[in-house]
Length: 376
Length: 119
Image (cartoon, rainbow over all chains, first blue to last red; front, side):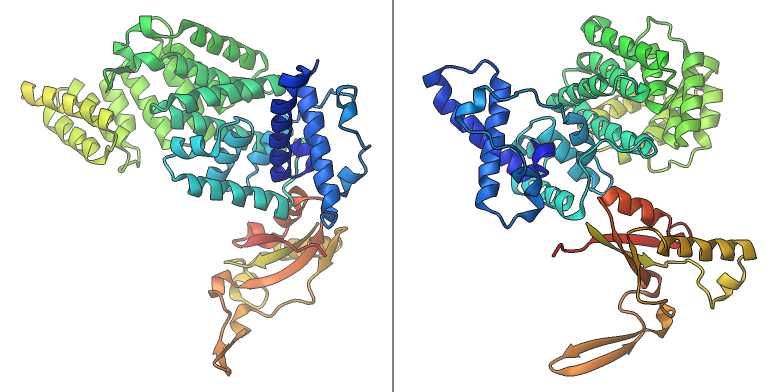
């Protein structure tokens, strides 16, 4: 509808009207043979009526040229409509929109979440979220953000923007708000269906599925359980198998991008113990080259520590300029503890604790610190 | 749709400055060639003329009927506008592509792409 009308608000209103008509007619006259087609055709006719009434909207002349369809004929009209979700996702995730607006629009239009649900998920008042959506829709219209799949030479960058939005939604849900993670997975599956030949799309779906499959085991009564200590019986094996299948698809498409590499790492973490830390370290090395991210280097330090001992891992961690990053200090604390340098380990954990604001994370760090004090 | 592309020079070297003189000749040539190509792009209406540097600007305000005149541009020198053109394009993606080809965008400045109200 949005693609046909070129207007988010008009499409939304028309769809609402169509549902209202359905609620009135279907119980009386019976459900039509093709309910979705009926709804779309009805909404389209309503929108055309609206535009006819408001002829000053010259921008919408495209619609007026559409063949008139009468309400009575709705059941007979051609009710196959193109799937325009892909165009929609590229519009919602256009880089000319602010990231938080991209996320909100994607959830609203593709995820079908209500404004209230999105507001609650992102811990902002509902009027703020409504305003954010209004502003974004207004900009799409006024600035001429196109409703189409970008041309080939733009596609890699624009696809990366779409995947980043979906992954942000997933990570927002990973902290505990499960509906967002599930919503991100649904979006990921839809993208994989719409872009079956893009390895990074499958890579992202694999990454999210592998993480999500371990979700229930990550917490025990609200406390964080590290991977090595997780009860694997609480893993969602179907979800993890789905993740591995998506990764295989990405690799078969010769994917070597950042999401594919991260998914490969997540798959190795889901293997039986002992994990292949040397391979994990090598993949983090690859990812560090692709992303140039010190956070990735820190993860490599952890893997190297497992493969070659804490000394080697610490040497990498100490080189990183991540002084305000709590995981750097937590990692240093852990490696120093293993090396028997209790004093320095305590200092590092205290730094981490000073930077951590999540309650579960703080408890984990406090546990570690208490263990060290006992030893001392 | 019509867009105005506002060229913010930022730290872009501009003719008449030491930074510009320090550029190798082929780079200066490339900048002139890029602006020439821009002005010849179908859909582009070049600005009315080349602006003198922002240091030569005078800013005028009227307060309580009195005209107040100050030296320099309204924005900071670094944020001042160094030029503009109008581009008639199908959509924002096309306008972004043209904006990215303006030399200032890759030499320390930025291009602001603003849609014009349709009449």
